[in-house]
Length: 148
Image: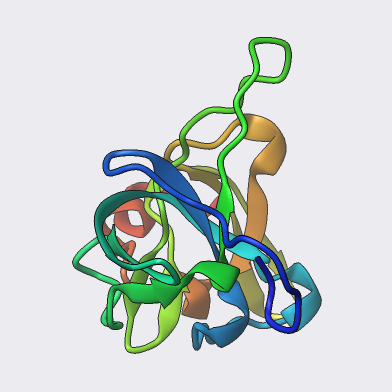
């Protein structure tokens, strides 16, 4: 059920997974267009009322864990389009952070270093070029990367 709609609200069972609409979650990202529209999936741990559910959020998400049912949607899994359960981003000071699995390449452009990052839990097609400033919490990987 979405706000403004009449009818029966969605129902979730305890232990079922649900997507959380990201529109009310304060995520500091570089581009709103590239920001995830849904977060999760997260497990439903308690039914508060017909219109509110408590979700099991990772400890890095410092937000209240009870949500209006209109912000939740069912997780649909099918064998033809099975998706990998990717690790959720770590939220530090309101900013999303993903875990670095490795640095696959490095280049210098106009005196600024960029690193091709392999993200933990994601395929190599999703590697991205990141400036050094974006990798301040991945110093272990940067120390092992040779600048040649």
